[in-house]
Image (cartoon, rainbow, N blue to C red; front, side, top):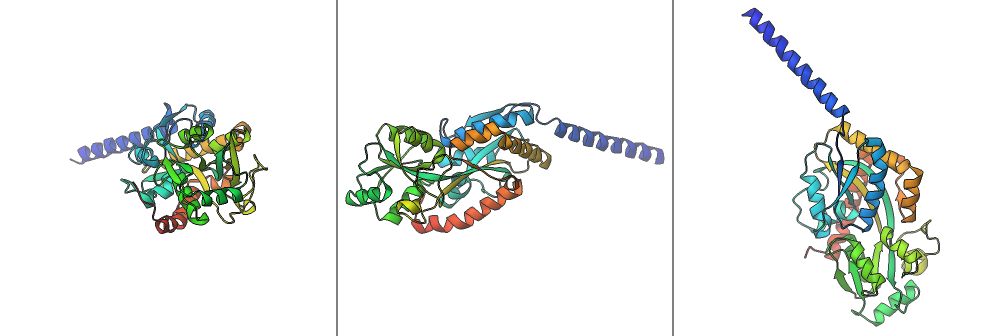
Length: 330
């Protein structure tokens, strides 16, 4: 009996040791296949563009491609939900932003918790928005634009990414701050289609992300009235701030981060975080993001803990503002 017990304990111990070695080996071998990065907006939009640039830089560290998967709809909630409910094996991660991981949770009844159902990987970039208009709009500066809108209430069309999206929130706040009235025109799948119509003159105005609006403004395809920040963009020093242009304090900043599903192993999060950090340190990647008006978070804010802190602080700031404006899902 004692001999049987000794043999059993020996075999059990060997099994545990074998499992532990296999687990470590699996972790060390990660990733052994391509990693999917879910982007909750349409291809060609600002979040998609940023994601593709960062993903390209991550490949060298991971030794595997990072493949973009666009999962669009409902102001980014469908794509974010895809991440929240994915397997935490490290092969599915998701790019998110101010809208998907802050605003949406105050507006939509979500099937996931934006803080509890994700593992933060890294903060990526942040950017102010730009107040932009079609080339033929009569106003040439922000003060004249506001006066023109007040004189023509309800006539100007304003492109948004749908109810509750960042552009929608910006449009509602702009109306409230200026005493104007706009026709809010929702677009499916992100800012790309709306920007296309703005360039074509099909809509009048947007308060858009720098990533999609700045290239068009620099090309002269649209008018840029102001940056929604207290300092000018390094990539476009001729565009005034809202303070300088006549709408002081109208600050709105979008930011992007990378998340994994809840329960993803810390060793995998650490490897993904290192890949992001290496990507953001690459001079070519940095230059490409800067041309889009993006400010890369400093290294000390590129940690999982820092991303969680940023997100929590933004929720505490913006939820009361959203509830006060009465923005609701439609």
